[in-house]
Length: 461
Image 1 (cartoon, rainbow, N blue to C red):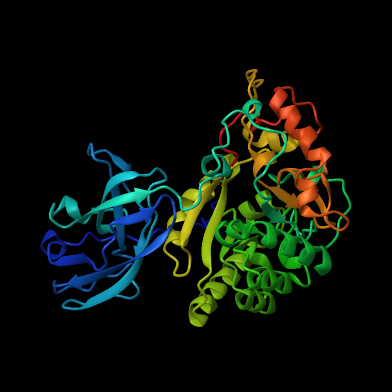
Image 2 (tube, rainbow, N blue to C red; image 1 turned 45 degrees about the vertical axis):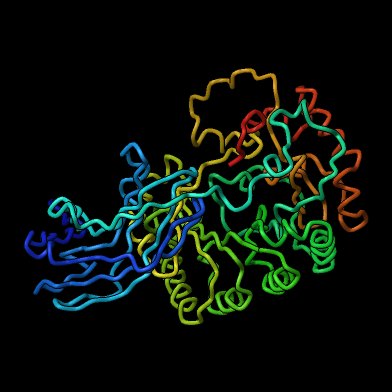
């Protein structure tokens, strides 16, 4: 018996005639001599339609503003940058201003930014008219804040560093809770976390924040400090109070969230708190793919609806929170990334779409390891540790225990507890000294770091 396919037909795209393309112009309205590497920004552009035909980002035309980054030798650092949709259909003879989403190259240097239009699925406008592109030389600067290694000239190899650290401690993240309603297959928490669960008390949080800001105000103000760990922070009944307190003390607070949690009240509380940066984790492209990755049934479309409402409310309130839509880049998610990247990149209120690098945490969650390395080969033996974390920053767990690494899902190496010790004492305490000595000896045996694949890497994802 024949069955009827449930797959909806794709809309037929109609190419704009060359004569019309040549009469549609784009102008960059602001000078951009310098930008920061990898930091998403908005660029003010004007679109003028001198043709007789209306253009739109909706089918059947699918016209978008986009860009290329070109190196001095003429090669492309990024040929097809992120797309920005037109805010509304632009009639013939009309013009509009819009803020296009722009992500500079990850590496500093001299580049040429080429801004233009494309018909998605058909071609770029410059294929018809080479003069169409707006070309601007741009100096891409290094990221605003470098690592402690660069700022304090921390030696590359652990063996060349010191046990006692004179620079003030930094906090990478505060784990507001390690409770979570999701069963994510790529998270070590799901099948491997055995420590007790709970919510951080406000007294613990306040003590840790106050000491951190007093000791290292520059880091707190300028670096992104995350208010999440191995849990979904939005389930903490006082997450907004914690966020507001951190921001009021001068902390550049950020948060990673799952949009399924954005009920009307939670969304409103989050916007009231106005964190500096939100990582919105939304994997999959439909209910089935979402459930396979995040472990919750019938939740993708609900998550999508809640996120779109949240973005609309954010724009209505004028909240300046930067939003990154994040999807984990591993085989189970590749199809979904291909399916939805253009959609999410074009949404008003989303500053950056990122296919986030997959991490294996401390390397001891074998079910997680197998997601990317089913035929994993032994890591080649190295003899010099590169990991910076014990010389740079720490993480505060929900119960006040301080650990040296945000990958420590089971608190395998607790340095001390902020409730009964000072941050400074923990930073240069015997447990931290012992960890540094291990790394300096290039013979790492402690239960957290032994076997970690990031131990001999310059950059921890």
